[in-house]
Image 1 (cartoon, one colour):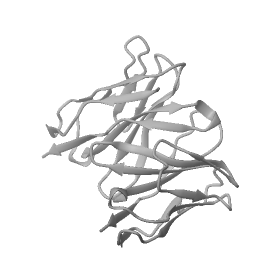
Image 2 (cartoon, rainbow over the protein chains, first blue to last red; image 1 turned 180 degrees about the vertical axis):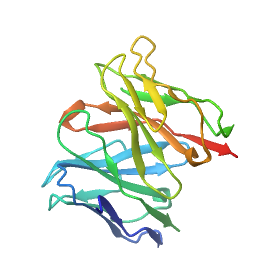
Image 3 (cartoon, rainbow over the protein chains, first blue to last red; image 1 turned 135 degrees about the horizontal axis):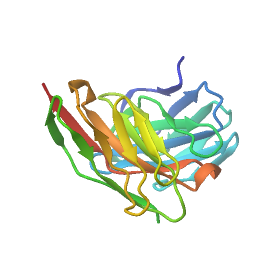
Length: 113
Length: 114
């Protein structure tokens, strides 16, 4: 009964380093999303995917790339980390169709020094 | 574009007090509206939703009514408990079922004291 699993849970990077955050869901959901959560700003959509092999930009995509090579996985990459990318990152997934609720992972806390 | 505005927190209440968290929205068309809750150290969970005007969503003693005339979706609970302490997010669907994207408010921290 895993739902949405994010790895890692915590990470500290130095400016300029790269890393990939992994999101895996076991609910056979078609749609997946990456958000960042910052104090006083709620959740902002970075990128999303409506199916395997497809991705699209959200509200704040700059500095991030994503891939959806398998339906159950959605990867978020930071090619050259910057202190402004210090945040808590959440992955979510949902079924196709109107009014479907999103299911969230527990988040990845990322600090860029 | 579409947007959601929530009352700022934190909201501090005593146990068994009445809770209201205000949420208003701006949207074209007829979006669905949601309340999500985030407990400390966890991701967001759906609390309730309403898909059309005058619908009332309810769950765990919480209620919210979709008011198109006032573009509001206020969250209420008659008697809060310490275990309700969390951050509450109002959200609306953006582009409907084509993407199921959500637009979130900034969140309201609720602290319930025994």
